[in-house]
Amino acid sequence: MIIQIYHGEVKKSDSIDEHINERLGKELAHIADRITRVEVHLHDDNGSEKSGPQDKRVIMEARPAGRQPLAVEHKGDNMIQVISDGAGKLARALKHAFDKAK
Image (cartoon, rainbow, N blue to C red; front, top):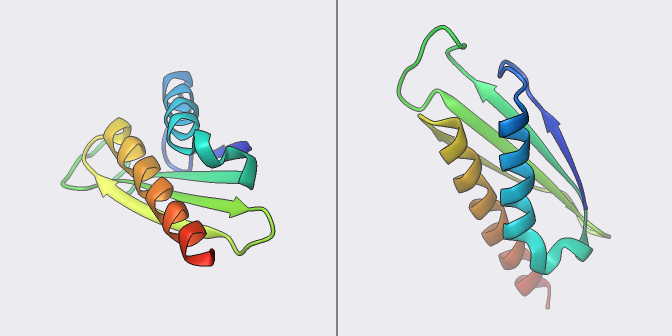
């Protein structure tokens, strides 16, 4: 499973990239062999100079082998928490899609 990270308006950070790889690796470990790629798009809707309610956003798109891509979006106040919650949301959506296909 390849993880591609697009930072958008968010300043590139090794700690954020490590967190993304760690969380997705943990959440998707049981189905990683069925996923070819995950794209992670980070956004800071108000920019780095301002903060506001739910101004951090992540879109995660998984590409399961032989299936249509599946995407989730999550918003919040803290980028680390948004990434963690988004990874959990993606894992649940993929589980539901795989279970439904059976």
